[in-house]
Amino acid sequence: MSECPRCHQPIDVQAIACPHCRLPLKAFGHPGIPLHRAAGEDYLCATCLYHVDDTCNFPQRPYAKECTLYVNSSQQNSTTLYKPRRTYLAKNWLSRNAVWLILGALLLVSILVALMP
Image (cartoon, rainbow, N blue to C red):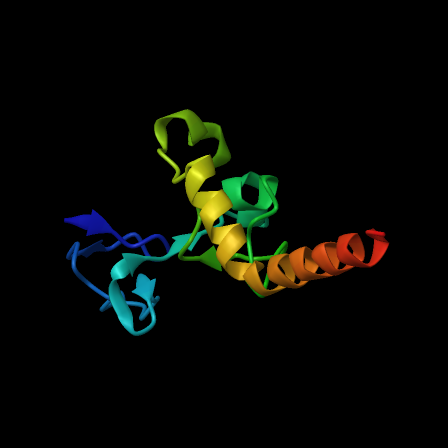
């Protein structure tokens, strides 16, 4: 059994809200996702890894008191983050810009043909 952060009453680990004070404990509509809360007057963004590396897209950033995506930046080494390989990044870039590459190649070929005597 765990404890409610507001009323400190014992609650079930699977509880979505505290049965005593009705404090939401899990993300709304997503009972499997934990809801992280800031302690006191602090904001979660001040210590969040996603805020530090500027990849956060949470609407209440940088003043979020509750967040489901929070990752503590001081525990960054213990957290394994996904980093795509360079070949995947290159393939992805080529597929997104294929039209521009083809148009550029056609333009280059047409300029070379025009400059030939």
